[in-house]
Amino acid sequence: MRWTRRDMLASGAAASFLAGGGGAQAQTPKRGGTLRSIVNPEPPGLVLGLNQLLPTMLVAGKIYQGLLRYDFDLKPLPSLAKSWTISPDGKVYTFTLQSDVKWHDGQPFTSADVVYSTSKYLPETHARWRAMFDRCASIKALDASTVEFTLKEAFGAFISAFLASGCPMMPADIYDGKGDVKTNPANNTPIGTGPFMLKEWRKGSFIHLVRNPNYWKPGQPYLDEIFYTVVPDGAQRVAAIESGKVDMAQNNDIENFEVPRLKALKHLDFTTKGNEAVSPISWLDINHRLPKFQDKRFRKAMMHAVDRKFIVDSLFFGLGRVAHGPIASTTKYRDEAALTKYDYNPARAIALLDEMGLKPDARGVRQKVSILALPYGEVWTRQAEFIKQQFGKVGIEATIETTDTPGFLQRNSNWEFELCFNFLSQFMDPAVGVARTYVSSNIRKGVISTNVEGYSNPAVDDLFAKAAVAPNPTDAQKYYSDVQRILSDDVPVLYLTELEFPTFIGKNFKNVVVDASGSLAEFDQAYKES
Image (cartoon, rainbow, N blue to C red):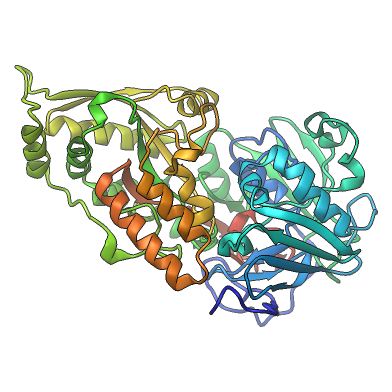
């Protein structure tokens, strides 16, 4: 399938998926009912254009929408755009919008909102969209229902950029010409086009969404309301889903060691579907500015020192896979043959350290490192302790440093670490979610989800740049294979696991996880049987 094709028209909706069961639903969806879910931690805000942290995306994904959705195979589907074309040279993307879409305040959604969102609002507030905007030569409204994006050069990943979390549509009437969008009073009452609207947010307690009575899809949504309850304590979250006090838990809500027991409960369905759009890889960031990490033999030794299969099997209880390189196995352009893979081999680790001249002292210590732990729950604490133990067996003495979430984000983005746990999402295409970690142009102090490692390799920069503008997938694959070959050998980060997040949902709820966004999606197809 060529990227330069015309008339790339989407048709139909994603195949319906019942969490835990799969397959299409023969039963007619019922209207009515309440879905009670967990949100953890409490989001800092609900305006998706301003904040893209996971808790915000979870709740605000029902309020705001993008031009497209994506199925489990990451193929684009209609959302606010009902169809689209791509010019033969791959530079012009033309979107035709749905008819009769209204914002929650009753104003019509038009091409003017798309142009405003993508050319003014999001370039200021959204790091991922800013990178897309920089590739645009122009963004024009051809008429009230047609928008044209003209790129400076062909960029095949552009069609993957229109997910609600990556490019949410924002109302021009509310924000355009009204001063700083970050301090606009309307941010207290988010206004989107989505199937649900904010009714009440009782801080520290719950967020209450209700059906949008003027939603543009006839008869939808089916649910009357959604309650997102703030439950900070892990044991209380488990008790809530186990007892039926809440109907749904997702993402980091449930510690992995609790998953096997909850999977056995008859009133719950379980799935890991819906992670495809993000496909996160966890690793240890390495601060390459420090001399101790600049010899790649040391980085390779650390890889051989860690039993990553044990992490997957025993710490994550089988959720996920061992990570071997920068591109996840669920993301296109993965090339297994290009990867250097590091088995658990302490003897090889010791041999590399010996080769470097790092001899053990009287206590058996060859080198000291500090590890900044990720404050996201017990599984990450256990993982830090396990890696400390594994390093110690080969003579690498590790000190674990802890902080809260704001402190972690500050230290990581300001390069105040030696090794640091992290995980980043792939966002369906390496040009969008992978390159940002490794290209030297993205070394930006104080900005999260960038090249915080300070890794710099001109060959890698060149390959990512060429892959992004390759005229077809075959050429792009050649560049991405080369970049995987270099990075897996160079070890810019210590690759750990490809994460899978568990989702639990009451069996009486259907059509909840229906596309690659999973629990972050809009839920306009979800319904309650009884």
